[in-house]
Image (cartoon, rainbow, N blue to C red; front, side, top):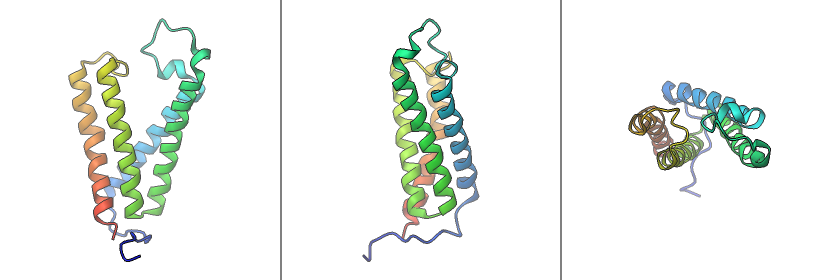
Amino acid sequence: MANTPTTNASNGLPPWIVYFGCLLAIIGIVAGLFGVVTPTKFFNDFPNFTQWAEISYVTTAWGIRNLAMGAAMLLVLWLRTPSAIGVVFSMRFLTELGDLLNTLATGHGSMGMPLGLVAAVWIVVFLLPEALAARWGIVNAR
């Protein structure tokens, strides 16, 4: 029991984590809604694909995944518990890393930009802040 992380909210939560978490929640919820309601608009780098009904289980699952990540982020920001922040931002980091590797391997999701530029922006805008927020949560989970 002595090593169990506290469930107390952190008064020292850096504001940038809250703002970045809100941004991630909004992106997750909006992307999730697109994935569920209008997958052709979100997955627009498949212009000649016409069999959307046959893969709706994939696009819907992707959308639900993003809705769940957005909801989890809102919950963790409301709780302000360092251990929960560490876990949720770690989940975001691992998911974003997988998505980046998938984009680099397939070229899909790059919106026509050079893959090197996509990787650099993805790392700076998403992966690095997510890793730093996860680290803050883990370090402060006493």
